[in-house]
Length: 374
Image (cartoon, rainbow, N blue to C red; front, side, top):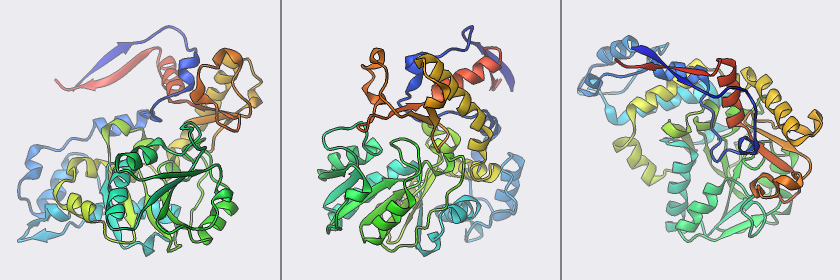
């Protein structure tokens, strides 16, 4: 393996295009280094004993301590069940403490982020007569300011009506067949939802799917009690936490009832190398470790935004999660065409992965180094 370099531009500066990223994803250098070092030989997919699997993983830098105890069938590791101890360990390393009450969920599924779980849960629940309507936080008829756009996109594809309210406080009484998909921290602005409002909403008995995809990006951890029986599922994802959106590493969907389609996928169509690499990410980095490492970079990004917009530094506030920031007023007139920045409340929001990439390249002297296989 050798090293190559890509030359970049001359100075660190930002423009309007850096205030928004279509995908909230920054491939953190520490994550890239780890993943570049991991590679399983094709012999790993032969019939192997537990000792052979353990040795092959260790030899290829999948350093699991203690060694994972995979289930066996006729003396060989049972590939159909390899996901079980991996998901259990991800739960123990990260999710158990972040999400008290997960022990009350009987089923765990490996999914390619929250979105795959959403694409399965909605049609299955609709077919069983358990979901007649999707509900989200947002403004009717306006995509910007709504929850994660994937919720509505999936609902539309299965002809499921969408109900929106501006805030949880305006949710009203529970409606049979109405299932709420709620991200916390919020995909809208990267901030934690108000605790009292969320707990009152859940206590009212609304059926809820809690999307925790942004949770690992929070600078300060915020334990969420998910024990209420009307929380039907909790979705997690490594995509934003580690900056691996494009690679589709494995999240964990926790559900109270069996989900037939995910049961089938778990046995027949799981990506074993990706699953093991995902566990290495959760094993290598402690909960909320990466956002804390990059908190100063988020602050520097806010300073750069303030300079671009000719605002005081205190006008640009870092969000609770690393990759976003807000301003408590609409954008100046010259940016009026960038409608995706301004929420219905008049608050401006910014997605800053592009700024973090520019910061990194500037500090590297405009050379991005990467390994190359000879």
